[in-house]
Image (tube, rainbow, N blue to C red; front, side):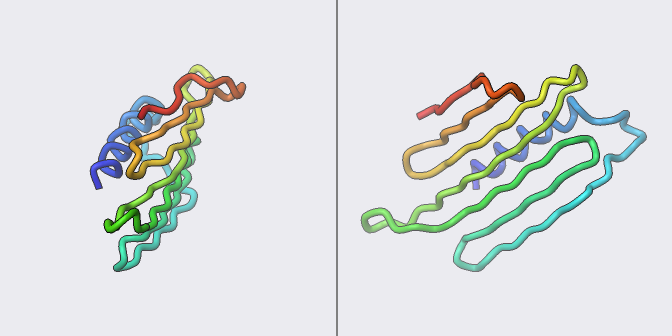
Length: 112
């Protein structure tokens, strides 16, 4: 849950930095979501200003404990034309993001 909140805040900052003026709401081109009582969920969306994101969570057993593993991705383009792609996995081993420039060069990698 903490990871989801952190990710939503990150996407909010990205959306704010790339959004149209406040008086023009950004159109949502597609959105889907699904959740189950066992803790699994999926969501995905795409907006007219070029932001897209998706996330998938599963509950798995590690030893005697049930833990959540979340994987996802997001992409966006800044006003200067630079595009970024974020992919990540968060599990019992930590949060592991990879951020790539549109050219494919890695600008951030796994944090343990």
